[in-house]
Amino acid sequence: MRLRFCVLSCVTFLVCQFAVSASDWTLAAEQFNFVQVREISASEQKAASELPLLILEQISENLVRTPSQRELEDRTLASLHSERISLFLQLSAAIQERDAVVLSGATGFTLEYKLNAAQKKIDGIEKKLEQNLSKTQELSSVSSSSAGTKKETVRLRETLFAVPQNVQGLAPQSQSYQNAVSKAGINGLISADIRVYGNYASVTAMLTVFPGATVAGTVTEVGSLSDIVTLAERLAESLVPYVTNSLPVELHFQIAPAECIPDTRITIDGIMLDPGDKEQLVNAGTHVVEVSCDGYLTKRFTYSFSDAQSYDISVQLLPQREIEVDLSLKNVLLSPGQPVAFYTSDLLQRKSEDGTVHLTLGGQNSLGQIALLNEDGSVSDQTAFFIIPEKVQVAGSSLLLNTKTSDAASLIDKRRIWTYRAYTALIVSLPFTFVCWGNYDSAKNAYLAGSLSSPDPVYAWNVATYVSLGVSAACTVFFIIELVRYLHAADSVIPAEVQMSSSAQGGS
Image (tube, rainbow, N blue to C red; front, side, top):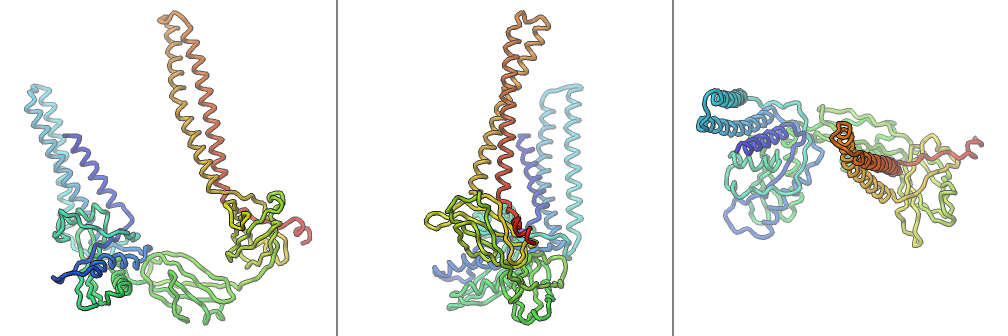
């Protein structure tokens, strides 16, 4: 009984601690509900299941939420509530334990000692309960709705939240419902009521924040049931401010050189801004920004826009350059007549029979890949990556690539398996070594003390000790070798750096 209560209290404490310290905010949705009392068609029922998932798809995974002070206090209150229940269970167990001491028949000093120990434990639990109730009362009396300073990343649940049968029909504010939502790891839940007239529907969606079951916001949208994707997009756009609990962020772009400004194309998360538009409102969170212009190199970056309400983004576009070079694979690394394919940043395949290819580069560090070709012209698993540094990109130069192709994934898996085998052999050998060593030491001490008349067991365990030590030493060497080979295989995916050939260096 005592063990059960202790385990329960420990699990409850750990769960509460995890809930408080988690840095992710999980957003989920449940199947939407039809409020009209009428027969629901199969297509309408399908829309009620697909619409919440479509809304979640339209909400960016990289949003950042700023929880309000009230929300943080609700989480603390929920944690205190779970702790309070756990302390009460511990208190009941401690009182039962004290009563059992009285009925045990112990007398005198033993009875007094056990009663004092039990009472001390009860006093400690009651003190914690009083502190818990005091904190709860203090938080409950504070009214605050201001935003906190903590930032949390919004994570989207890929499946609908299914309300357990034992809480169906209960209000979200009920303790049983909140426990079911918290057990599922959900912080925000989207629910909605649907009203249908003809082929059109009115959807009233509501975002409820847990714990506390606080309604963060309610939005209503009307759309056609034959185009629920557009309806989901508009609902998601209206719900995002309530999800992030923050105002949109203003992005101001400053493009240089000036002649690029009229033709600059700016995309945010794959959505292109209107031509000439250099200001944009986005939701707080991480976004992928791309700035491009004909004749200039494209700039692409990812940034978390969440610490300020306005950002000035200066982009300096560099003109594209066309630098023609010859790239050769070291001859000794390629079999005679072996076809090979070269890939660079333009993703075009350039085939070569002699390991030499003509490339046009843009004057920046360029990542590429080579792959051996099969007899039918298909690309084999024998590949290698390389990087062409900006410093060697000189027009008309000859570059040399010194690398070997390999099936890196298979090689790494093979070396990893052998490393595990070597480590297993080492671990298995150690118990035998310890047993032999211990028995040898015991036999030696027994012989020296005179309790063992013959030295033969000492000699036997001495030999066994040296043999087991030798095996363990061999396993250790085996493990070190395999570990080094595994690390070397893992390094094989690091791109090799292209060098300028010696003839080109001598000419320059």
